[in-house]
Length: 368
Ligand SMILES: Nc1ncnc2c1ncn2[C@@H]1O[C@H](COP(=O)(O)OP(=O)(O)O)[C@@H](O)[C@H]1O
Ligand SMILES: [Mg+2]
Image 1 (tube, protein in one colour):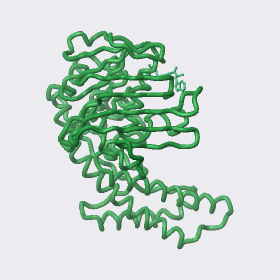
Image 2: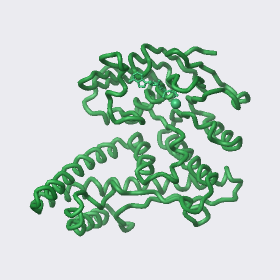
Image 3: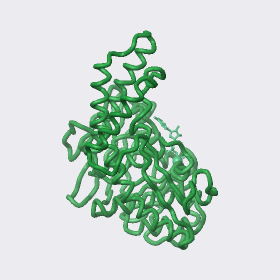
Image 4: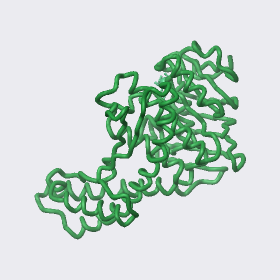
């Protein structure tokens, strides 16, 4: 996977940016607020269809402009491709190879990217929401079907929630037939989500264990596993659905009292053990960061093997957060990737081969 051109117009702090990256390591250096992360955000947007920093497309448009443009030229296994986003104050348009897409899901898999930001280093400590996002961002790129299921599940969840809240506000219990209908939809969609997440975590777990062994010199044994909110047997699709449907049904009284859906894959989590103990509560900060790095690098490895080509790696300000050994581990894992790395200075990168440094200042990017 190779990005050959990045074009931004009125995107975030940029008026106009033309950036032709190099095939290996692209280091973007600049002061705080110079606009470094804005570039990685635009690239990741083209991989997953939305910003990792905001849910509101409006935030992406330069404050002084009426619209914004992001264009990425790339080469993947299938050949040359072009992804474009056109944002206006009243909506957006996405184009692939010049053709408008009907559904944003069509974008998934055209550009594969793995993003690593300082927030990822606290993956272990963060809330379950962050860990679900860790699974979902990769799964959406690898399996468009997962993306559609998740989108539909969230829409159904919203509807069920509205029904429960209306019940609370009016004091009238929601129509059981309506609840049945939403439960059936959530069961069908949620069951698939749970199966796909479990399969993903099973594969990821082995990779993460091996990587963590390598980083710690074999001293620590990492075990990462899927923690579904609704437990289900090792069975087929029918078993998962039975379990989820029963959980939804059995929690109805509580859901009506609280005004939201208390059970289901929207409350899933990942468990991470180190030598059999929960890293979250027992690990030192160093162990937690190493575990997070291992998890992230295993995502990179999984994406590489599933897609048969290396994804683009986006490293936003993470190097300064890691010690020397971890830095080397991270950079050596990126040996065959095109990589975009932001930092406030190029210190510590002197020995890295195939590096090109760009300086980001005053809304421009210049090769150093
Ligand atoms: N919609 C916008 N319009 C204009 N400027 C913006 C917009 N969104 C963010 N910015 C500016 O972008 C800058 C932050 O860019 P960022 O890429 O996060 O910097 P850094 O180099 O620290 O990563 C800030 O100065 C912020 O004010
Ligand atoms: Mg930044």
